Amino acid sequence: MKNLFFLLFMTILLNSCATTNKMTNEAIHHAIIGQNEKSIYSRVGIPTSIVPAPDGGKIMIYEYYSKGMYTTPYKSKVTYNANRNLTGDREGLILRLGENTATNDPKYTIYEKNVSYLKAYLDKQGNCVRFEQNLPKEQLEMYHERFKHYLPKD
Image 1 (cartoon, rainbow, N blue to C red):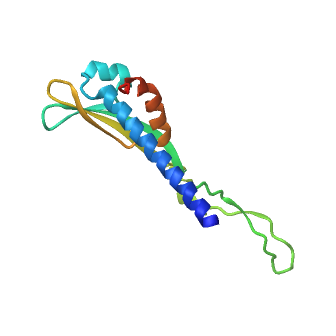
Image 2: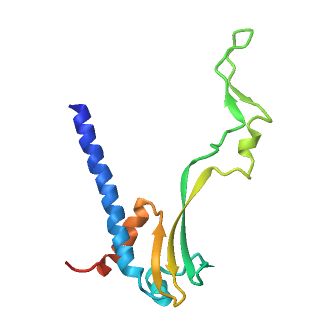
Image 3: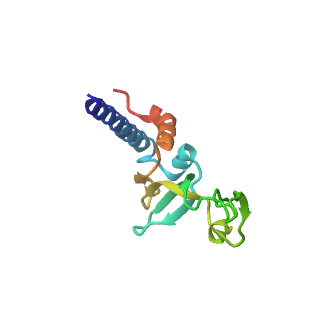
């Protein structure tokens, strides 16, 4: 019974994620495909970068940064040792210099930075012909709310 409930829950969860992605892609499609560069600026904003495309057009790149999981967790130089010494006394906090210096170095990041993007491909005339994205769910929901009024009425 637990397996059946788990399977049903996972199916609903996966379908809701796929539906959000599909609906957002459709909303973005209707909002920017066929639009000129100025219209895309007004709907999406100023891009992070604009790169020339091989076919003579442009690629407008919108990048979004977020924090992910720890890559190098902070390790303190002060460690706790619960062992007993030779006389039977407990050893407590001990300062050990030189331990874990690599992970405490400032060049290491505590968090991994995740970069997601929305790329709008413009042709030579400056009209959007296609887009691609790898946005997380929160960003997809924001774009869906912003662009849902561009969806055709059924």
